[in-house]
Image (cartoon, rainbow, N blue to C red; front, side, top):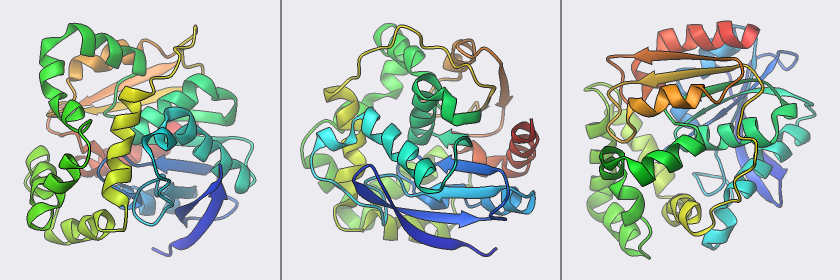
Length: 285
């Protein structure tokens, strides 16, 4: 796989971006979540590129080699959305196909709600619609229990110290413990540790969670997604209940939901072949 690596200016900062596939192919932007970086899509990039798509995979702000602005305020959802819009503009596209996993899915949902005119189609992997998140966190004790870590991340400096300790032991254990036996190889963990060890990265990564609590955006009157949407959900997700999936897809005018009984939160890794096939078919329209 021939990757093209570059730094692209957008929304007042530089994003580290990996691209692959024919330059004239239909564009697909893939957005990673926590605690990953572009490498989280390693099993999708070759398949999508070989299918003829132009695959664009940024390290989102604060992650790996992308810029890491100081302060919690810099990680508000509107800034994260504007990063992607600026990236699309910088690459010269009017519209793109978009897929997001975990926090990348949160940004993807926001684009689908606020900036649907910039999207052809939307793919969501294991993250619920923002309105469903709010509802479950205020009414559902099981999901509140699963989300304890979000509240622990609100503390200053202590989460960073805990995650860095013993060569990232807690963060490595969280990855391995939330996936299947072979979801993350030893080689994968080494790549993640390199990304986590970038100067300022762990604080910037945690600031996504802090900004979500401290700077909650105004809720738009219309929370529906008008573009075609495909939602893929691994049912063995330890952090996010699959009960949030169906009410999420109900916010989509043209939505399809597929569950994977044996996949974890890392559905794009656990069921890579099937996920790739579905994404390729879906984005063809």
